[in-house]
Image 1 (cartoon, rainbow, N blue to C red):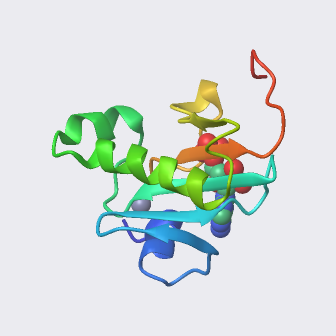
Image 2 (tube, rainbow, N blue to C red):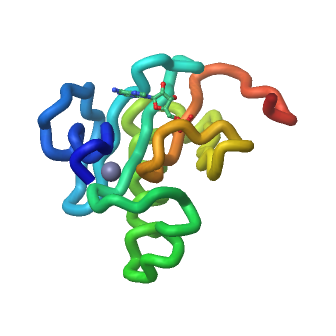
Length: 114
Ligand code: AMP
Ligand code: ZN
């Protein structure tokens, strides 16, 4: 997956502001934040989208979710509330096809989303 931007971030071949890391996951700030807290949480292994991650069936999806919550704790938004979003597929606006959870918080988030 040499042409995958997020694999390059995992390999430290491309810079990112890392917030949290576990053995199998990495969290870094979104380059174009949509909220005061906007962090992307990824599995270090390449899976294209949430459906592929769910099928990995080795507890990796759990670890991504746990890391997402840990990011909210680190950024101080866990108590007030935050949002975890997996854009899945082009119609949902997915642009990077290495699965990532957006962790958004630090402001009032409207619903429904755009
Ligand atoms: P999505 O549209 O759900 O695929 O989200 C992709 C996200 O990756 C967007 O919010 C981008 O701002 C973000 N992004 C793209 N390139 C980088 C990068 N080099 N470092 C951090 N975030 C990035
Ligand atoms: Zn990748």
